[in-house]
Length: 178
Ligand code: 5GP
Image (cartoon, rainbow, N blue to C red; front, side, top):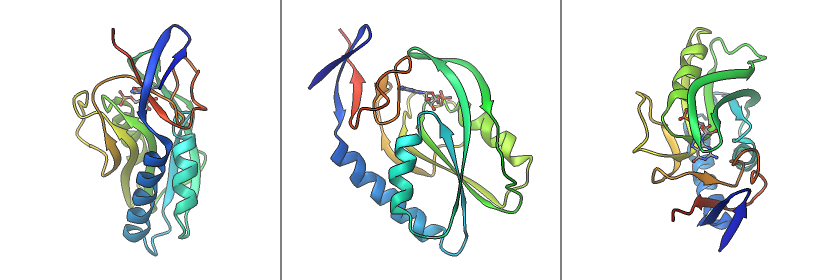
């Protein structure tokens, strides 16, 4: 199936059912690994909102949930600098932190966030990302919890946008290359 968003054509990449199956697997892993640990999930807005919602509905242990808003993308590519548009509102000292991301691409966003959070002395920090692009990754911390490793192509849907459009799509789409 193909769709048009603004000036670009996208084709169906990962259907909703496959996403939801994988999200359940991730939630069960987290439940097991963080038993009795009362972790705090930091959800990176905007892109991770849909993933986080499905993930946390399947995570049935005690936890806290908070949000942070970062951006490094404009259109189809990263601008390289990570801006924090909404900071962390809670104390994470001595807490087990799980960062929930939609996608780890170059890893710049996550590296800069981890550095920032480490200053606040949490007990541990791990990344849970729905998508990971290993070919684009330049960082030192690949996500410990990862749904799908995908090729280095722009994707949209399930929370991820193309110029703020397409976030509401329940499936994931990939940019069509001519
Ligand atoms: P990084 O800093 O790892 O290069 O990029 C992370 C952020 O860039 C993600 O949180 C996401 O907002 C955005 N991003 C990276 N790759 C894609 C992509 O293929 N599609 C969309 N829509 N956003 C992406």
